[in-house]
Image (cartoon, rainbow, N blue to C red; front, side, top):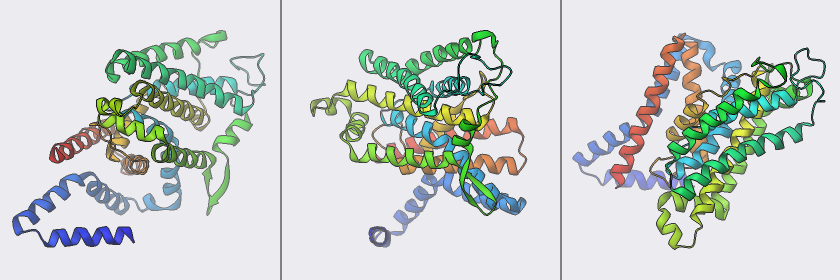
Length: 356
């Protein structure tokens, strides 16, 4: 009912405009929704060129790929709400993925990294990666809040530190940087197994884990004092401080929660990829940031919804899968990804300037 009421109110306001204002209205609507319009055109074109694009296997693949990226996007979205970003996200995913793989390799795997270590219980490994990710996030938040450093600089530094730690980790016990594979069946079944299929296409378990994370993050953002404080700090930290919000604690908690999300992403990626190495997680933060901006999480701060993050992740993944279906050169795909981020940020800033 609320949607219908809003549509009626919007229609009434539109009809009250004069001819010049109506032209301006449509111009603004086209610019603000340019990415969505292009997406619809891309989907139609891809389906015409390759009808398999909208068939069940492809749709489930898009859902699965989106689910794998939802935790990192939900984490980095909080940093963007605070007018920041997090360049260390991808490397934290890589580190936690390699940690997960090394602790959950089969005991009889020939090149097992820790030969004397049994396969650890999955909940223990989840706690380990959450702790590792949370520590990195806490460090990011502490330096941003305590020393008023720009998140770009802080997370650039931690990105290098985490990458160095990752390179050292995969050299342990004579592993010499070899890919970490040979994962235990229980781990693979827990993450990539399936309890539900659509037709003959299985839906991986991590889709349901991602759904739970989305619901949890929605609750945190919308129903807790912490979520309200986060948006207050993102909108105006000085005003939030005067209102009694502990800006430093909120900033640290937002980055710590983001780090936890990166750790969970690394855990999922470890089993999903099956062979983890130093480049695991490379540039994941770029896709996550692009998805957040497309989904309406603004770099001007204090604006964003978890539903928008989910939508942004799905839209971005649809575009990437469509590029593969159209056999677009892999190198060209990087250019297209960069253009998407540039256009999304430009549209976001334009909306801010118009409101201002």
